[in-house]
Image 1: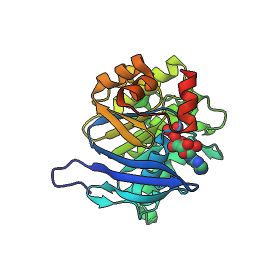
Image 2 (image 1 turned 60 degrees about the vertical axis):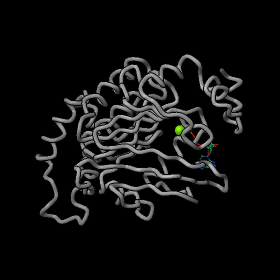
Image 3 (image 1 turned 90 degrees about the horizontal axis):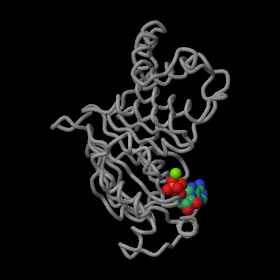
Image 4 (image 1 turned 180 degrees about the vertical axis):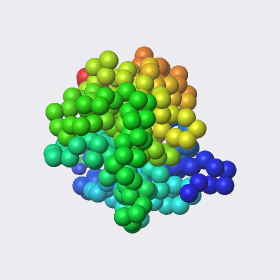
Length: 274
Ligand code: ADP
Ligand code: MG
């Protein structure tokens, strides 16, 4: 599954994509290796979720140019499940409710379909064996027992949903994970809890792309690489200091530094907002 040097690599090359007849991504280049933590920042409407969706094969996007490679092989022709089996994970911005299915069972079935795609009965993990794995992961990301007995996302607060995503990430143990707006709508305690979970999981086995509008989660999760997406392409990359710089000058400040005019309605709205 990995390249000969051992580290899995996600490579986004000159990616152009459109949705509903509109060009959204206009040439994204980005490489994330196992063991690295990257942050992708950008104003509302800049294409962050579109990028995450295209990488994971969410329906509704058309790739018009460029490629997404995992360990040198294009994943664009693969369905989302197959991408997950190859080691990609995407936490969704708006997790859905799954009534009638407890978190434990949801996670066990996700685990089984990932590790045992052919559904061989004799290869299925037993409830007991899974429980053991789950316990360990729960301790790691700080999820309590009563939470995993509840139905998936039903009545979960924003913070609980995010904690669930982190638990899902821990259980599925991917090589590369994309976390879209992991901080949106979280109060500071929930934000810290989620960040702590992410920090517990980050390490040589995991490459992380943390997508965020705001700088604040980056006070707790320190990325080695920060990229800014504007108008559907990466306009600037740097180290952790780039996030601080953005906090100080705002997206508008970066726009004027780079001589970019706010082209989209969203960017214009943002300009007025800030
Ligand atoms: P971000 O996550 O950075 O806020 P998105 O990727 O969600 O940005 O959106 C980028 C642009 O694409 C926005 O202008 C948005 O309105 C548009 N867009 C996204 N999804 C759709 C869709 N399904 N249909 C039409 N337009 C869309
Ligand atoms: Mg988004």
